[in-house]
Image 1 (cartoon, protein in one colour):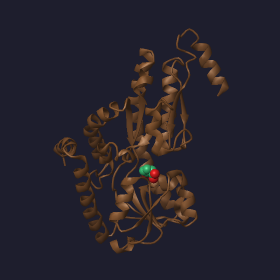
Image 2: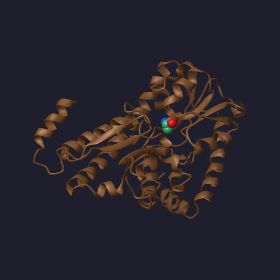
Image 3: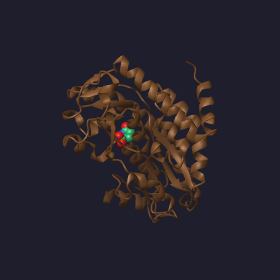
Image 4: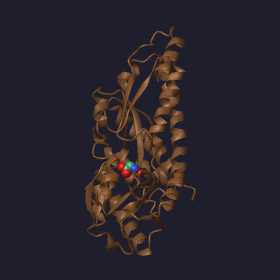
Amino acid sequence: MLRRTFLLGAGAAALPAHGAAPWRLATGYRAESFHGQNLLALARGVEAATGGALRIELHPNGTLAPLAQILPAVRDGRAEAGETIMTGLAAELPIAGADAVPFITRHYDDARRLWTHQRPLVEPAFAALGLRVLYAVPWPPQGLYSTRPIAVPQDLRGLRMRTYNATTVRIAELLGATPVDVPMLEVGRAVAEGRIDAMITSAVTGVENRVWDGLKHYYDINAWFPKNIVFAREAALRALPDTARDALAVGAAAAEARGWAASQVAARESVEELRRHGVKVDLPPAALATHLRRLGERFALEWIRAVGPQANAIFIPYYSSSTT
Ligand code: PCA
């Protein structure tokens, strides 16, 4: 690390902005995950492209601010940039909650179209807070984990279901489960200690938290594709030399493309990894699937009511652009 800094320093000695304080990029997730690796690649790319004029330092695991505080931390200047999960912003920015409306995105192509129509609404909402959207990348589709088989919807009643924000709390309530808030970094421990009976999250999150000793069943319900969004403070961007700002924009576009591809690879590989560790991977039984869809519709109506006309601005073009 020292050596790399030294080499970059020597090569970039003539650049005026070299030596500026590095940007702090705060995330609530792990550096080792595919999202974190993508952020590190962005940081390395931008540092190289600017000859060190813009260095980005990753603060993972909620060390700079816990997940729910990342947006305020960047807005208030405690970090120059941040990564958070969009569904976690639904209370302040309802349009960001489109990410967790269940069963409207069937695959990555749908998720990509959703982002195409959501982005033009999310950007001004961020701009109103003095923030600029850099890119967004989805987690793999959300599946249902359980300690025991779920044959009928009633089997979910009263189960302690791990949730990760207000949106997932509402989904647990609609399922008749008892929500238990567990940040992603603590999922492994919560499972090992027997504090949860079920959860809805991606296969990759199950793998990274090694949940297989407790959660033996995974139903591929393909419920939604929540996205992490990476953003910067407008004032910090304006303080950059033009070349660094351009390099960041180019790096962000590349990170978005790379991240979507990495998510798809992680989706495939992690379901296999769950299987290898003895997790029974199934499609949901018919009665459960029908029930989940009905709850999905109810959630969608609640969401539309909360969002108002902007819901049309996203879903009319989203559904009209569907070719299937
Ligand atoms: N993993 C994160 C968010 C969505 C996902 O797949 C979590 O479980 O907290």
